[in-house]
Amino acid sequence: KAGVTQTPRYLIKTRGQQVTLSCSPISGHRSVSWYQQTPGQGLQFLFEYFSETQRNKGNFPGRFSGRQFSNSRSEMNVSTLELGDSALYLCASSLPLAGGTADTQYFGPGTRLTVL
Amino acid sequence: DAKTTQPPSMDCAEGRAANLPCNHSTISGNEYVYWYRQIHSQGPQYIIHGLKNNETNEMASLIITEDRKSSTLILPHATLRDTAVYYCIVRGIQGAQKLVFGQGTRLTINP
Image: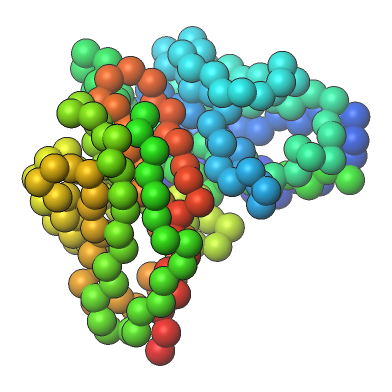
C-alpha cells in the first residue's frame, strides 16, 4: 500500500503571499491531520479532518485553514505568510476505527516551507 | 492526554540493544502509549503502541510497567539507521486524532 504523500516537498514563498499544501492519505484512510514542526516549538497539531469536516483544531491563528475532499485528500492553506511560518508541515492519516476509536496515525514526508 | 518525560539524549553501540525509557505517571486507564521516531527532516515513523501488555513487532518491543506509569522501548540490535529522535506519546482511545509531541530522546547509534 502506498504511504501518505505530500506535495510539494519544498516551497519558497515571500512574506504576505499565501500557500496551499496538499496531502493524499493512505488508501482507505478517512482522517487527515496536519502538524507544524519548527526548531523552536517542535511538532504542533494544527487540525484534523474527517469526512470533509474539521473535527479538532490546534492553537493557531485563522490564517491557517484546511479542507478535505470527498476522496479524503486534504489541503491546508496559509494566508498572509510571515517569516515565522517557515517550517516543516506534516500530514498524517488514519482510519479511524469504528465507534470513534482513535487509530494509529501514519505520517507523510512533509512539505518544507521557507518564507523569505 | 497525559504528559510524558524522556531523557533528551542517549547513546548506544551498534549491534547492542537500545533501551529508551519514558515516564507517564499521570496516564489514565483508557490511554495508549505510542512510540514514533523521526530521522532527520523526515516525517515521524510509527514504531509500536500498547495499552497494558508488552508488545513486540518487527521493529521493536514495548515494555509497560504493571502500574503503567512508565515504559521502555527496546530496539534489540541497533544499527546506524536507528539514529533518530524517538517520541513517546500517550493518547486516549476515543475521539480526536491529535498527537501531543514532547521533545523526545535523541538516540545516537555509534559504530
